[in-house]
Length: 499
Image (cartoon, rainbow, N blue to C red; front, side, top):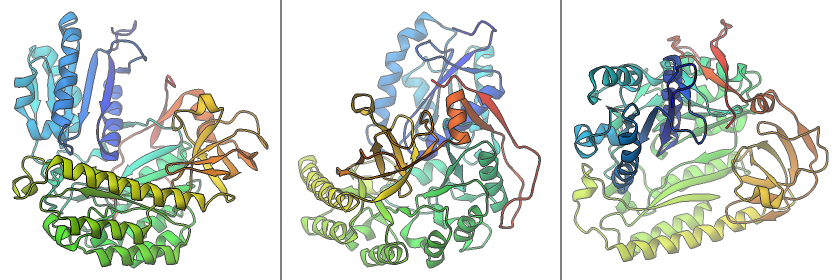
């Protein structure tokens, strides 16, 4: 199972949100710094790491079912190691090893950097190692990262959350909000751009609360403007902002900074003020709709998406109708809709009036039908419009059959396009094209017209060569804003297998 050179191979399986995806890049970076190599597709790895999520009700069953399926492989090769980290590990702790004694390592959200040491200790001692810290030992962004994409990168501005939403277990598992200094964030962005990355997404559990630790409530808008000063950075996105902390200066920064995309993902959760209060969401529906109106006034082309929970305890038919009305008024380009999931340890789990499954399901289907209708209408309005696409990898499941490629427009919409017309040699993920929308569907757009332009990029070159950025941890401690000063190269490019 090890490579011929003796290096142990690894595979990481990720569940959950963008924060988990980015954490997995950190785990990969640390393992490779420790001498591990990424397992070849189809080969059995020496180490399998599960980076888990605990937000949904079936997360536990999914993990333990998968661990059960891995037991025969572990029995056949005792030298294989299995590690479980992330939010579910933080929550379940010692019970993981009790339920699945063939697991070798359990680590939490606060000690990602311990993984290589814990694996080595478990091998040496021939017993499971469980290490769960209650607070961060190091900020995750000080750790190296093996980036998955040649053209798009995640950059954390903060970890943790200070909110107390009654349905959410995340603050208990990731802790209170910890902010990075602006200089550290900007240095990491610049390091990615130096490696050819065209697009960054700024990440935070509550991204626009950024600055709370160093006392600047306008810090996030300033950060967006500073990203606009980084040469070669073509697209900036962020997720997810909280309506409570949304300030006019952020809207102005989005509208006035050319490389900040006119895309906003802002969770609504419910359109009922009574339910929002029970959820402990510190805004009401009129506040939410006012932000939507202000964003559209400043950026008429903005695509606004959201999260909505259906069937929160005590939700009445009238409450649900109020959610539908907010959806009609907001006209989201898309919505991530969820049926309420009871999570032990959250206040909502013990609330009375838990709704029957059939009631939640029926409301969920009505909401999805309404949002699909709105999404389709909003997409049809774009037919005939010219769009710029950053060509993506693996976004279109039917691309092979249709002979199309796929890319993301600046507003985040997925577009499947025909690779004909003004093409400068082969189109690669990471290249940029311009085309015209010819057809709309609820969840994507189609552009079957000839391309107007194809621009080959360094990101496309790197994708073609199998090169992916590997960023070193950035920790400069700079409290100021603006583009970071010139500094020695902070990243090393690694030759990937491009699989």
